[in-house]
Image (cartoon, rainbow, N blue to C red):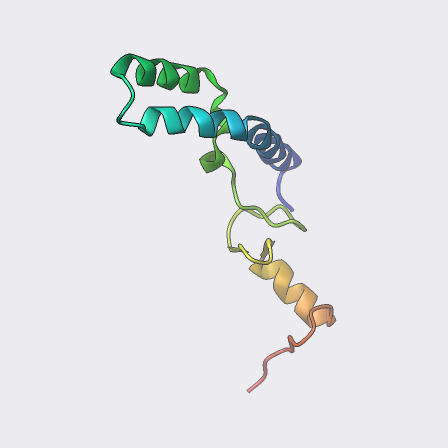
Length: 101
């Protein structure tokens, strides 16, 4: 089990990303628009840098929804390889059986 503080920090980041998503998208669109004047783009860039760092989507860590483990997480399932194995052994994942050879 991961540290609860790390899990909570990541959850706060997710909330911030959702809160500032539209604002960041609009500002990035202005910054990337080459047709606008340099001053407008610079002001938009300054506004973008004033936003909280954790409101950037890049700072979100993929964590297991069950254990909070940060490594070995399957993106589609949002669970770690270890949790996936445990659920498979318990028979909770349809079609997944223990391998033996």
